[in-house]
Image (spheres, rainbow, N blue to C red):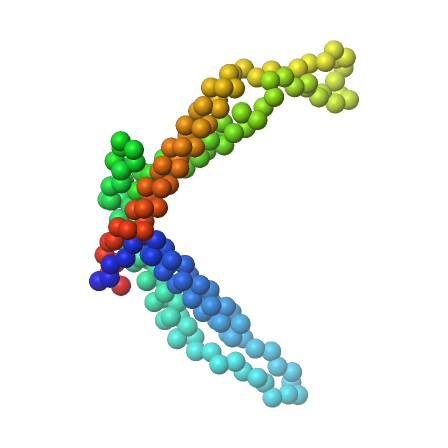
Length: 170
């Protein structure tokens, strides 16, 4: 049993994934070789059983650590302002808020009035205009509110991920 933070666990997962890529490349590069008929072949050292066992061990460690992180995310409670949320709830809410923030960002960049370009296909010679149908100040305030909320959630999550430990059975 080992205690680790979520930040450490994620770094460990990345390291194990890098090791796994190494062994997968070794397998891909060494499982066959090419030789001309009139030359002595250079046969790469390759032990399929060793590579397969190593990949299985890496996958098992990755699965154990990811499971422990998932359990911790589902059960750990984090204070965000006046709310107390689980880590997985914060992650879901942050994704939702980021999508909404992107919509608001597009709205706040719109000009109050723009000319519609119908191209050569249009038979109407009278220009048409597109007008915004919202108060830009209200959109700006909502954008800033959501940005601040995302930042508050991220800061709480960062503090939690760096300080709170959980058990991993590796």
